[in-house]
Length: 206
Image (tube, rainbow, N blue to C red; front, side):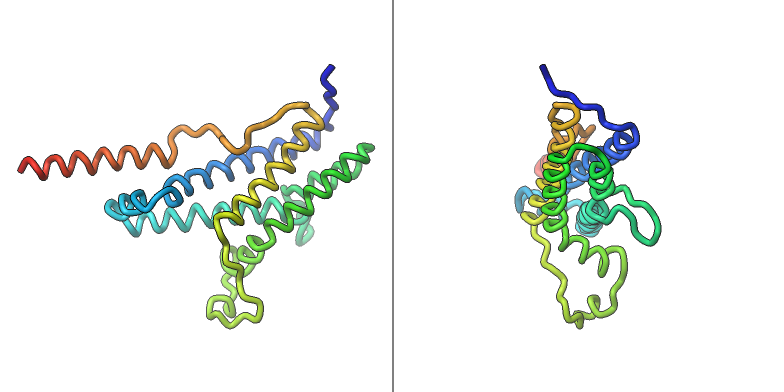
């Protein structure tokens, strides 16, 4: 018989809200990766149609991903205000009798915080604020170089954390990695390729 535990209603509300955040986080990263992290041919295609536009989209999507990962790993509260974060959920677990799960989730929380620490530093000094020393490259603690693999590692840790709740309380697995999108980066690339092919065809017939 499947072991399904009852998740307290207040915890369920926080968990469901975090699920929405995690789904959209992965959706934005998937689109970013499809558009800008697949091939040089795609980059050339985007530059043909609007280099400045797609630079804005590149920066906006990336900043949104890093901001979301930073928010998810923020403390449960800051500046006397409660945050929707993984720490909030961890604190709620610590108020229950699920001692073994408390240990598991605390370890997953620590790993996730560690993976996302570079994003929070970037958020605090560049994305959410405009640190003068960082902007002028005079800061004694240089900003981290964010790589695609660092983002993938952070996303993996977030998925592990959320999946632990799925398994413990609902005995289910949620596919956070592949959210359903009604149109994505691949779709846009397909249409742009069709437009370019049609344009080239017209030129050859002139």
